[in-house]
Length: 242
Image (cartoon, rainbow, N blue to C red):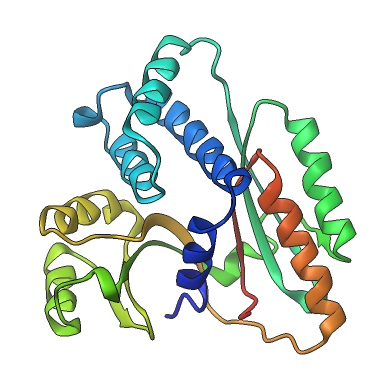
């Protein structure tokens, strides 16, 4: 169950320019707002907020920015009203794409997502048209260079913590969990001193699509770039093996 180049993508995003960092912080800021609205501003009593804070720290978001976001969300409970909308569709050569958004203007978001698919020669489908090709999983990625344990020791620690699956890739380890158990397992591993490059609930493709047509790759990349640049887009999942 490989994340393919997910680790490389994470590394690349962390090294990206300030504009890309700003986009990541915007995404996390909205997740903080939603988590606070749903479960309150105290991380000790809000596991979803603890997960978002861990994600923020993994993306080098400063502590004062995190705290400011929590305070702002706590003070704006009446006015913060992001709606979660998921879009599904196809890129070139039938590549399946799922787009998670958090928006305060669903007309704007729908138009932007539709435009991204159209410009990449793809099409938006009906809800459920591609999500059956993915499994919802908690996914934790550990950089081999930052991990003091060897593969066997980390695997045993992860399985003892409740993980479902473990795989060793070229430069990272991947740990998969039941999505409902994700928060607890992430915290167990954190307490065990394991540094995580990424920890989130994600959509893992059951099969991957290889593309060799340069034109198809160009158009698909265009769609993915446009979606990644949109502030309303929280996450994009696809089954292109890259």
